[in-house]
Length: 183
Image (tube, rainbow, N blue to C red; front, side, top):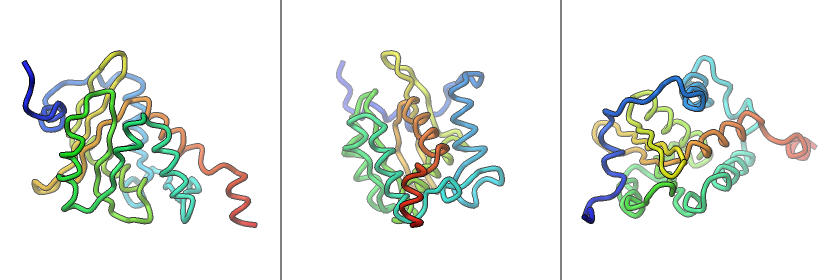
């Protein structure tokens, strides 16, 4: 029977499913996005994006690399936006089927899109408003972030995308790009 509601609606609104906390990749994701969150002022333990070398124009380089490391659907559905635009942007992609990815999130700063996205993921994980499902051997994460009933983020990402972002960020800016900027 065909469904008349967005495919992902239940996964972004009902967070009562148990998840195996012993999975290594899940632990790595929690460690990076929550415990060592690289958003300035969020974690006492975290190394900030700026400390990893992502500041000024380098932030735009990181944003492009993050989009490139995801699926084709992510490149087309990566929408940092204002609060009042989130629901409208979500409705455009809400019928996406995994393993498709999308990121609809509140951009806290136009100058640091990755920081806004990471903060949205961190909030969803910290507040338990996420689900994890497996589709055709791909592990998919569903994140929702709301404040006082107002949507702030709707994100669906493959586990391998989340892990590749960790690697991109923790490797920092390539040395040759940093030396060109300081020359």
